[in-house]
Image (cartoon, rainbow, N blue to C red; front, side, top):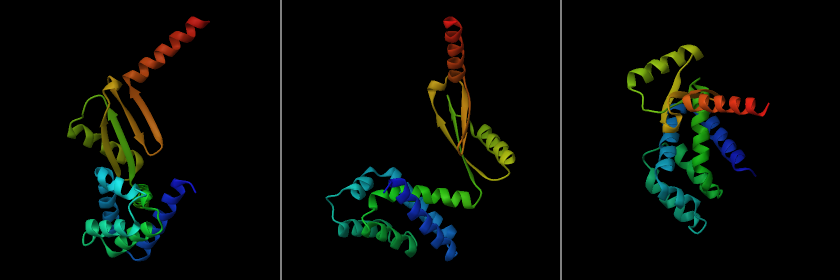
Length: 182
C-alpha cells in the first residue's frame, strides 16, 4: 500500500472522529503539537521509524511524551497507529490531518518566497490582499531564497505565480537561444 494512501486514510478517520465528537478545535491543536514534535525532533523520528525498537517501548515513549498534553482521543489514536505498526507514518498522517482541518475551515495555505526577508508590515499587507482575493482566511508563510535575485514566488495551494528576477532571466536566455538556432 502506498504511504500517502495510509496517511490519508488515517487522517480522514481521525478527522471524522473529531467532527463526530465536536472536538475539532481541541484535536486540531493536538495535531499541531504532534506535527511540530515530528518536524522538530530528529530523535523522535528515529524512534518511530526504527524497526529494532519494540512496539511496546514505542508506546511507552509516546505516553511519556504526550500523555497529559493531548486529548485522550489523540493519545489513543497515536497508540492505535503504533499497535498497527504504522508509526513511521505518524508525521505524514498528522501533516495530512492539519491540511484537512485547514480545508474544513476554508483556510488557504500560501508560501511567499523572496530573495530577502520581508518586513512584517509588507507581509501583513500581502496577506490581507490575498484574503480579499480569495474571500477567506490565508495562512501565509515566508521563505528566503537568495537565488531568486529579486522579486518573489507566491504559491497558494496548488497554484504558483513566479515573478522572480532569476525566472525572468531564464526566460530571456531561452528566447535568445531559440533565436540563435533559427
